[in-house]
Length: 208
Image (cartoon, rainbow, N blue to C red; front, top):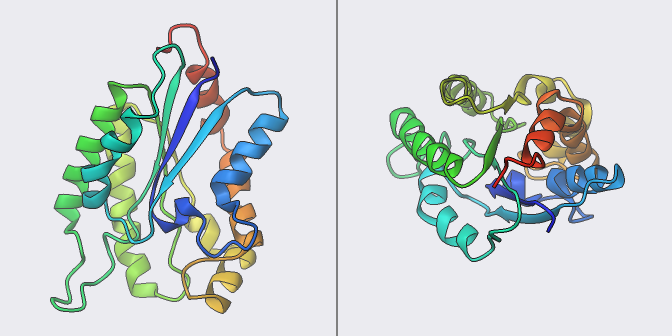
């Protein structure tokens, strides 16, 4: 049975804004399948989700889709909604300390079920202040992944310099790009050293 990969995150994982409905997840999956990889993919991205909300739901959503005879992989991408300011309090929806605590709980639990990969949250094109908060959180999440020996793909700084991402997102809703922007993100992931190495680990005989 082919390995099962769960892509878990927020609207960026969902592919919001892409008229082709592929997003980066669909593009990464399609490109990987075209290389002869036999995989089953589940997109579990939900718009507006924070690390707290993902922590509350992800295991429930995953367990009904697991297969004992297949390798299991988890790709997480979150953080942008954590640093979004609450309209009532003016504070981040999830504090940095809580974001890290939820992330550690999510990632460490996922490691017990399969192979884990973290994709850095993309930037918010029209909100420099939010991006400063997000950059700090992304740095802490990268350090957490290192401590847990989880591969981590950096995306933010490259996307900030990528016209397709920035221009499409600003022209759309300020955050979500169209097809070309998501293609740019998919390219970063596919060309990273972490993605093929992680896939190889996922499909190794020792992966349960």
